[in-house]
Image (cartoon, rainbow, N blue to C red; front, side, top):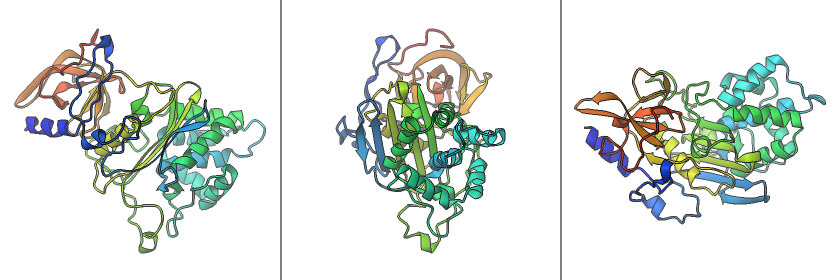
Length: 391
């Protein structure tokens, strides 16, 4: 029953007091044990999540957050930063990118295109790329994939502090054409990745622009967030017996958010996470979002609104408050969403329930029927009405 689903989702939701449009505030709900057990200054790591965290303030030259920052994680697509930098290294005074490579590098950085990464990995030496870039950038925890997995660029070992070092090189030492090419593409990160995952989690879901992100995910997750419902991501191969002793966990689902936040790329943020086997994409997406929102990120502006849980699979976010409006994306099942305001729209029926209220989701730029939001009331409590149907 919908009531039971909503109740279960509500128990899992963390909502803090935040400012809303018009000066209203959200009424706080009971905190989870994780939230209640940590100070406001500490990174709030959800139960069951293993995390490596580093936040660096470029203005002061200091770290504002460090949690197991030297721990090694499999990089997933974050390693594409090193693939791009290796290709761009010593390409002449103007660092011209040939059109054929631009056609691969741009979607690799913006939409995490895997076949582009396959191309650079195979053409430029695979594990040797990691050795070269580690030496060039002075990376301390980065290593090629373990024995038996030399062909899997996503199994490269990486830490949060090394990720910060990569961005510091890009922003402070790289030739201007290299910096501008890479960072401009990261600023243009697409919501839907090339494999149809919604990749605007973590940094992109926690802060207003300007930000630039390179995200990573690895493991078997239910998809349907940006493409056709019911499909499934290709699972990474099971680790061979020889690889089980590797320092890098190749089994648990990984979800990483990395990049910069604020004017002039003030803060560099790296949050690398592993989740229990069987974790849904929506649960990992939500847990990573909660962790990222808890961090001290200088220059980061958090959007106004109230966080709510959702229920249902492959739920559409629409361009307007009606089922006939174009689809912006599909939500990962059970993910938390930020609601900025609400408006009356088309009546939606999920028997035996009906609801005419729609929530505006500023992070998506679209509307979600309130029938799918974890609240006992059709009209969300303490959420203002939108000034117009389309803010």
